[in-house]
Length: 340
Image 1 (cartoon, rainbow, N blue to C red):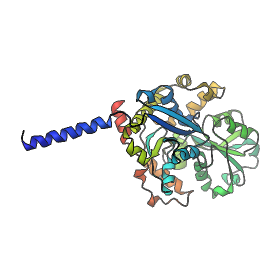
Image 2: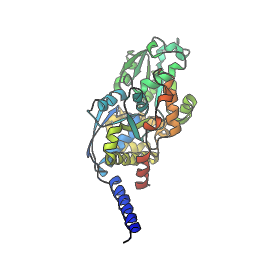
Image 3: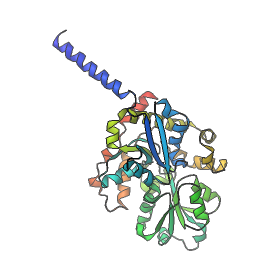
């Protein structure tokens, strides 16, 4: 064998070795995912992947810890008690400002699925969002996506976060009770509790980012929302594990894209229905277009999110953010090759 053939053989072996590694067994089979409000529709792909056994199919033993909101699930990973966050993409940008390197690697939602409602008891005095000043606002948890996008919303009307009182109410029955009992004056939250409060006549929606039309009207683009993200160091050290997680979520995204509300109800835990199947059906239909169909994170959407966040966070300078370090589609592309 001449030297040229030996070189070609060596290159082929390296290439095959790389392919084997990329498709190899997960480095960590036990993965701890933290999430803020798992029963919410915002995180439906995570639940589908869990309930339909997609994580197990990829050789993973996934433990999911549920917190009141996304800021708390983020802290679980930053503090080292969890490996991966199932949460809002914008945290990867905000944490870069704090010199923390986190990267989203698969998307579950390309619309926020968040809306803002004010108590109907206050409608006689409410004319514009400026009238929210001094009110008590319920969010899933302070610092979570429901809080962040609310801050963006009021910034358009000249209000600062300090102009309102932010109260964490979770994403379930606690939020409903807080509104009904008068503990809060308005609420920024996810489904299905917003639809629950609408149906019961407790709130009037004053900002809506549950549909493509309304999101683009507010922000000028579809924006990345629910995703799986993790410290960059964890991703680099466990590429096969990250690939396995991505494969499972892409399968869940694709399943939801063709599923009916009735099919979804058969898969999710009964407790997610809040005792009302019709409520969940109505909420699902309202936000179905918000779910990602392929797991890909749009660069245009990520740039839009960066600009949006800068409007309410004076510490965030878009020119100083390395946006390409906040997300990657490399693992999603490989998942498509497997589940085309």
